[in-house]
Amino acid sequence: MKKDKNVKAEKKAKKAKKGGTRAYRVIYAIFSGIVGFLFNIKVVNGDREPDDGGYVVCANHVSATDPIALCYAFRKNQVFFMAKKELFKVPILAPLIKVMGAFPVDRGGSDVSAVKTAISLVNEKKSMGIFPQGHRYVGVDPRGTKTKNGVALIATKTGADILPCYIWRKKNKFKLFRRTYVIIGERIPFESLNYNPDASGEYARITDIAFDKICTLGEEFEADLKAKKNNKKNSKKDNKK
Image 1 (cartoon, rainbow, N blue to C red):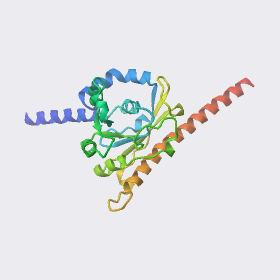
Image 2: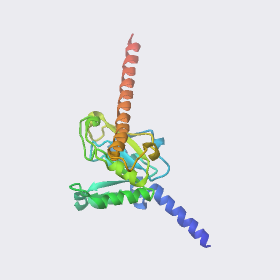
Image 3: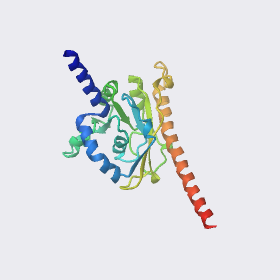
Image 4: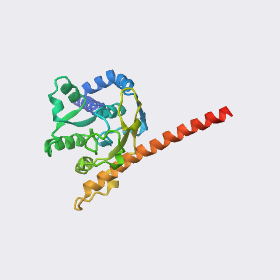
């Protein structure tokens, strides 16, 4: 009898861990279709989303809606995010972003508490979302922007794999109903990063590796889009002849 209770408890915990909290799953089920329609989101390489949690999702940052786009794209695991503490003072918004898995961070300084929360989440086999650029860069090529070392810090403290993603929008600008692509990249095993805790500059080196993967995803996707457009133009010309 006791064993049956333990088995049921374990199954319940696994289910909650995999799909996220119960409140999150309910909200996702209700609103994911609406979000997908309003933001016109298409997920590329959705099969690359791992079945298990405990990894760090990192992506380029164009819009305040980017966390929503990533949450929409990741259907197997809830992705948790840091959000600036000021948002948690907004009456209607605060409870909503809490349910979505956001927790406050003080961007004005070094927020040790927020970092500890992120590390704890990943250690609990939950997935943490981080934008290496630190803040939004609208309408510019992310390749030339500055980055912060949060993704490397969380990965090295937990030994977690990194999953690079690229959020593609025309001219790197968000607009309601404009197509948003979320491209999921190949998982970067932590062991492949060859982290040396005694070496200097390791956080920056690992961040550069992850961000290069992110930018490459976007560049390759952009090239594929251009190639498809050119093929369509050429086929129309051939049909006219």
